[in-house]
Structure formats: C-alpha cells, structure tokens
Image (cartoon, rainbow, N blue to C red; front, top):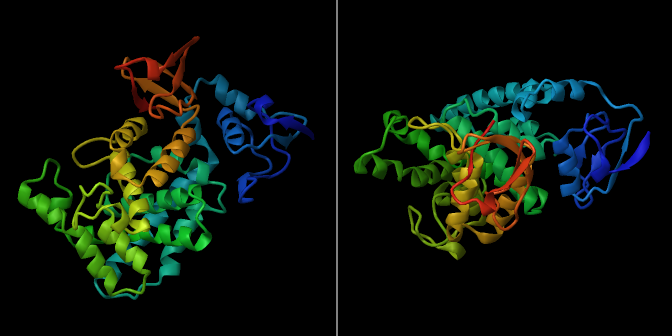
Length: 358
C-alpha cells in the first residue's frame, strides 16, 4: 500500500484502509472502496489530505468509464444502490402499515421500532454523503405521503449532522421528519391525490393538516419538538407561512429544519400533477426565497447539498450535456459545467441553467 495526496488520486484506485472525518470521526469511506472522481471531491471537501491506497488499481471502474455510462447509470448498477433501493422499499412499506395502525388506534407507538429502518438506511454515517444521489435516482416514486416522510426523515437527519447537532438532537430531527406529515393521512385521499390545481376550498382543507398532525401526535409518547414540527413545518421565518403565521423566533428549530427538508423533497419528487424538478432548480428557488427560512440552516443545507452533486452528468436547457466540475459559492445553483472540451460558467451565462441531472 502507499499514501497518496487526495488531490492526486486517480479514479480506479482502491482504498487500503477506512477513512474517517476529522471533526466527528464518522466513517466517510470504507476500505476496499474503488475510488471515483466524486469520491475524490468528497475527500477534498472533508479536508482529508491523504489516504492509503492499494498498489494495484481496480479494473472494474475503468470498464464502467469506458462504457460511456453517466454517473447516474453507473450508480444504479452499483451494489450499494441496489441494496439501498431494496431497504428503502421495505422501510416505506413498514412505515405505511405501522402509522395506519397507530392512527386507527390498533397499535401503540413504538418509536424505536419505527425509527430502526430509517437508521439502517443511513447506516453508520458512511451513506450520508450519498443519500441525495440515492434519493435522486429513486424519483420514479410518486409523492405518496409515506415515501415523502421517509425522504424528509433522511434529509432532516443529514442536515442536522451538517449543522453539527449532537446525537440526541439528530435523532429528534429524524423523528420530526418522519412524523411531520401525519396530518395528511387524515385528509381525504381524493384531495391529496388530485392530479391538478386545488380549488380554494380544497386548499383550505389541505392547510388543516399541520393542526391535524399536531392533534394526532398529542396522544402519542413523542417529544414536544416532534409535535411542534408537525404543526410548524409550513411556517416561514418571514411570517408568510401557515397555520399560525409565526415568525422566525417563534418557530421551533425542529420545525425549521423539517421545513427545508420538506420543501426540497416536495420540489424534487414527482407529484400527481408534474414530474420532479431538477435539484438545481430547487436550489435556485431557495436562493430566491432566502428570508423565508432559518439562514444558518439554509446556508448549511445549500452549501453541502451542491457538493453532493459534484461530477454528476447534467443536461442544460440548451440541450448540451456535461459534467459539474466546480461549485460557485456565490451562486450555488449555477456551477461550472464541462461540456466536451469547453467549460461553461453558468454564473456568467444568463438564461442558461441545469435542466436535468442524468
């Protein structure tokens, strides 16, 4: 084995030992990992200066690269994605049956049992940096409440880690994400699944789901923060949200973290009336409505999430395809794209934007 500076790594090299983050000592990558270009970016991002690699590189990655497959196509063929997809589907199925029984009063809430599949999806932290890749490539699922709650739990967990919250706070954030939309299960299904714009009366009914969720959780043995997140996840720091028109200092911090996770997942998931939006379009919308969210949380979310998409293959609205190779910290939704031998800095190209991650 040999020690190699992270910036000098070459795709195809194999890690000879586990890699851990400096600050939290979480496992970032496992021994035996075949390093990709995205892994190199991840190591640099986490300030890992050097790693130990095997003397002989792997051949499998070279074959994948030579095949011309996009990053997404290679990911979907990976064992990690196949395992994640299976675990995700099992997790959603278990949550759907459990929460229906709890609401119907046929079963008592066992929060540890309910949360266990969520923590299995995240693993020991090694998956955290790739969760967004995984979720993006599972967007064939429609916006079923159960799937959405799993997604929001995962995103809330990761955002809490990015904010460097302690472990009990991370667990509470994850619980808040999982149970935030329980009130929607008490709204008529024909309104929730309506494939078009809602009438004013239907929208008024939809807007009762935070209160209904809070009322349902009041009967259960969960943290007050989890109850508040159900009530407040549609409140906005500038007072423009509902149901109580609260402003920043009045909103529970778990309501604030779930609000960001909820909106991001809702925008990037398929809906009954539209397909999923590109994550970079969602990021641009957050940038435009910055004052609606907690600034510290939103900055942490945006700065970290754009780096999870580094080296993904994208299609621009001009029809050109390329690879994200540089993130502009002053315009997070407008990175630099390598198209063939050319480099397109989207921050300097008004009207050109990322339309799709492929």
